[in-house]
Image (cartoon, rainbow, N blue to C red):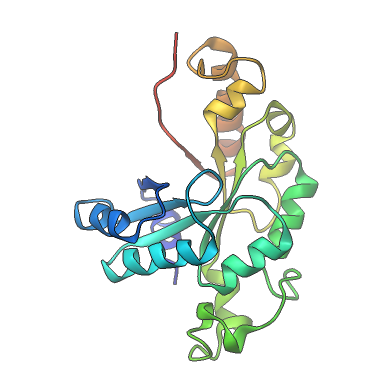
Length: 218
């Protein structure tokens, strides 16, 4: 089972460190110095999929767990990330329920979705060692988070949060602020009102919520 997902479902508050340098050594050092959850930033960070896999191997060898933020929501990207063994996925810039439904489908095998099948030969199944991976395990161990980082997403948050297969909403506060011309001023009343709207709706629906902390400018 996905340990991050287990912890979240048990009601634990989970913190993690952001990794953008594409360095397995840096990520391993973070795990060994108190950050057992590492988020690999594939949207803005250095590297490609194979470099992210190398970082993940270092994290896992040190006893940690990884989340991968993919650079975009294309089906081929999600399919490859899942096949290469990433079980916790963060997808940026999701502004509608239609987009969220497509992403949820891309990440799950039939009958739950439309993920392409190559289970016996991919890292996710231990290269075939996990015989029940496609039919039993993959669907349950996936932690799928999508980012709310535009005012359009806030307007659609009730429908987005209700999409089956989406486990958590991740607020991107600076991009969200930028979408209403308040970039780097996320502590001002207007961005804060949007953030509170997302928080309230996720609370109403019992949807898990995540974000990144950072200093805003007055």
